[in-house]
Image 1 (cartoon, rainbow, N blue to C red):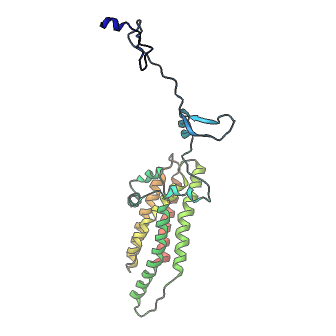
Image 2: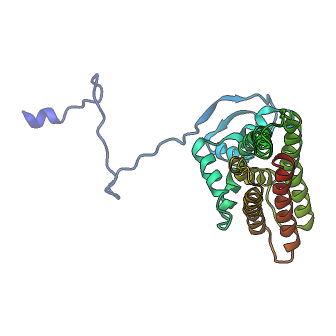
Image 3: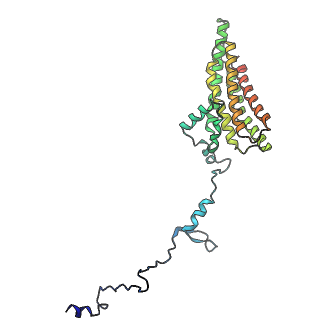
Length: 271
């Protein structure tokens, strides 16, 4: 009975499944899937032009590789400058501490992400510190020499500090940038120079509190040491960014300008 039922044709019955036929020449059964052509929505809006319609997945990576990494969107667009303020507190503190160790010359790590936050924050803080502590130092010196003398707050210290600090922090790095680019000795960006010179002014903020001591000889010792320290920071980092050894005059000029700035602070704000 079993053999008789096995010989019946069942292909016409509802729900029947055809038997899988094996390839006798090969023991494996091969399956071919139709070529898939994935598409991205929405399509291009080019209309009937070449390249219009849907894009395939394979073409997207080429599009991403061709996108520029620069986020510059124009001089008058605020979004162009946000990339130079993309720093957190830890980064700022690390760079402030690095500016206090000029012998390391380790400030070259800012090349990947130079910031303008330090330049603006340190310069503005230094302006108010020089104006306020300069008047305090003048008061202490006047009272030390003659306690009966009258004293008045010098408002002109604020404008003098603003012109000197902002002018130096902006114009001096700009001049050295164009000079070094003209000599062809370095490829650093202008923002890097502004960043480096901005952090070099941090030591003057701390030194201004020491200049309150009403001892003239001690004030001169402090300002010369602080000025030399800040000048070494600028010179070492500027030298590490320059190619070749025939441009020591540029490094010496940067050193002397930074030292002259320190003497200027002493003469005009802490006389």
